[in-house]
Image (tube, rainbow, N blue to C red):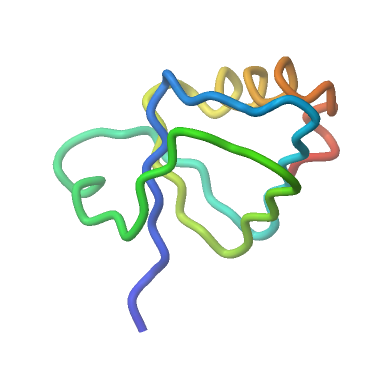
Length: 81
């Protein structure tokens, strides 16, 4: 079975009143060409998003990415991972 891989660009957006939860996800910095094998491109989060079991390729560091999610949703980083 192939891995579920998602790419989230640094300019992603989040709709108002959205919650985002990550379960068993691995955040990886985009480098080389491995990220081109993604199954999903996500640049917008809306509603109650629960991402489970994804390898998520991002353009910034995991800390910066989670800080952006927290800034948009108001949910602390410790509740996201």
